[in-house]
Length: 516
Ligand code: HEM
Image 1: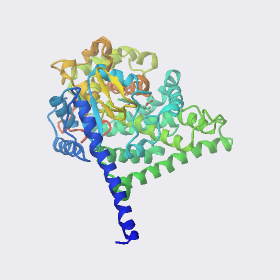
Image 2: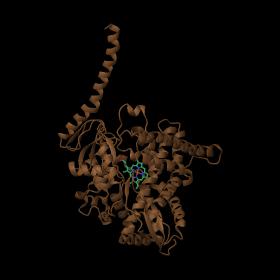
Image 3: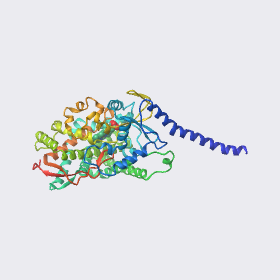
């Protein structure tokens, strides 16, 4: 064989060999080493399967669990996260899951949860978002890191706290009034409230944060909703090396299209704000959240400046997070009140005692103790199910464990909230009295045991806004109607980013004759 021929054969062979060794190192050696390291510290879990990890089992179990409705109980954990439920029962509260080739340490021990979430800025930061999540939220506040996060968080804190919240009350009330106006004449008939609350919460976030109406954001909401469904069905999707670079599945193509379209719609809204100032119709970009963002986009100080891309992502984030979450909370609370007439009566007595037949006002809202207990208990039973994702930035000690750098962590809040060791044998019953003396007492001063809004620096920036909105909506309904569950209701909680009622929530309202 000539020297040239040897060269032609040997060079590609050596490349192939190096690539193969690297591939086996990444996809076999590293996972097995991590598995051994954690197993030897007592962390067990289903075994690593080459490339796919445990994703196929998780997908299969979820499909099966969701294939039919369930009895009307609140024991939803085995249904909405069957794989996690079965692993916790088998391997304990902390176990190792293989999301493809990524090691994911699932944690549901309150002390460790607290430590992770309190140190979410540096030691346990957020993960790089999956492709589908980045299409949904981009570099918005939920996913962004470091200095950019600090800058964006400051703006959001300002827009959704204290005085700003008080100023939003009239817009929330006006949106509820529009919904209630539509309900007039529907007494004794069936109303599907999940969809009603979808429109309402869309209207509320549009008016309060973006100074527009639901109609203006309608397209954005619909597209974000589609993106969140696509993301949920790809939650346990394995990324196969190379193939994912060469071929894009239909879901990916659709997500890219939707993300482009959303960007276009949001930029149009921003332009409208800017034009008002340019045309002299307004002397500032406004004091609402969109106004603050547009101001930051025009800021000449580069420390405060926001790029157009970040502005669009922040709008996407708040349109989505501000609507989807409260929509689900309201719907499940109404279901629980419809089933538990005693708590419905207690909540109504409290509302009438504080507001009479008048619209809610901020000072009174702060006094709604029974309603706060009901909201906490609803969030415990039907809170967001997918967990809080983090990663380990560098080798670190967590409790007694030593964790290797760059593995992922999943704080499993649904497991925490449905844990009988923490909440007792009646864990699946709706008992708001658990929270009669506050969260600290209910959790035995274990901050990590109940965190529907997260914990630590990355906790929910919209928490006060969400509870204020929920309390206003429920107060205004309870002032006017009794709620009972329609016999047509089918209990089928389904996990998207929030837990949603698959077939809606059908209730029957009877007027109390108090048209406030
Ligand atoms: C019932 C309603 C809500 C629930 C249960 C909820 C839940 C959560 C949770 C658990 C987190 C922490 C995520 C993590 O640690 O990885 C979070 C963060 C966040 N939430 Fe909410 N949320 C709600 C309403 C809202 C509303 C109304 C808004 C906007 C107005 C909002 C905007 C955000 C944002 C931007 C973050 C990220 C904060 C950061 O990382 O600095 N949320 N939410």
